[in-house]
Length: 488
Image (cartoon, rainbow, N blue to C red; front, side, top):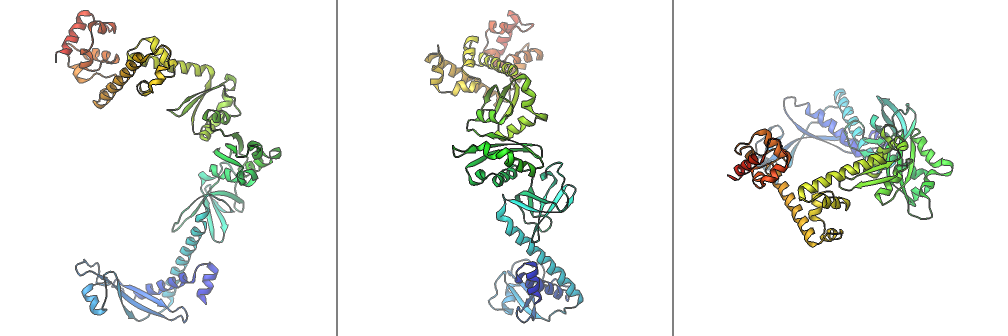
């Protein structure tokens, strides 16, 4: 009757209570052997309430090292006591039942309470394991240093850590709060259900509740970025061309978006249209700022955004908030600047690319400029771009294209070899420093011009070395250095 009462009150199976009582009685039985390590088992008759106590020994292999003869027995001895015994099994001997006195009762109570608590926690985990990703509502039980403990009813308690709570939100014990269940974790003590009010998913789930079109799947929220409690951006897409996704989320006189905002302590929400074109999506995400132009860098996964000079502060936002949220929403690194700054940066990058082609491909400024204007910026592109793209450039025939590709591959091979040999482009190699009449200052000066090794110097002609206009290098010394480099 007691087992039935406890099981019904705590909502745990009766077997859990019986197992706890058997463990408590077994613990009391062990205390009759204060000088020995004893294994004990108690079996309770679930109908009459009578119980039996057994002392146990684990059967181990004959050649195994025994940890203790108090609870282990070798197989050859176990077979004598119980024929058919096998390693890993237990043999038992019935002993006198322990007296169920005050101390045993207290021990039983502690074990039962512990087992019941563990069973309750296991049931909570099992009940909520399939609800991860759902909205959970409960009553604030207590507030400790900004952390919230939420009573969900039925002995279930959830936890909202300080960093998952909306900043500056006044929450007191007894308040009803809602959150996004993002993790269920089985722990022997402490919280098991973890809720967030700052997760982007929380806002998405709130829109599903407030906007029927989102809940029904007619409108999809493709992305969400939040500065919790302050401002957020969501990107929406309508799967039905007759539906206005932004209007649906805003609602009549802003009623729907306002309901979500109120739940989030007044968080301002920008609703933008999602677009599969990344540049157009970024333009939409930067609202309310108007974008004049965009330069996309696929390799760095970034975009340079040009806005009017008087709109620069609006585009960036207070503390960089607008561009930061737009960057989170789109997944692109966004650099906001004025049109003049974009133009200056573009010109600077083009000049760097032109200088790179002149140096690495050994072409004149005119050809380098043509390559830059056609959108090429690296030697790798010249080496591996399809031949047809280079042939499409006005004035380029097959001979020019093949020569450019050959030079590009040679330059890449040279760079790879230098990396493999640990040679820095701006640092002279040891063999260059060892050239006769070479001093360290001159070696570093040559390295600045790409002459980092003895071989580089030996390949030069006298007039080529003079053209570098290095101080102290006249025709006589240039010839002597080159000859010394060739003298291996």
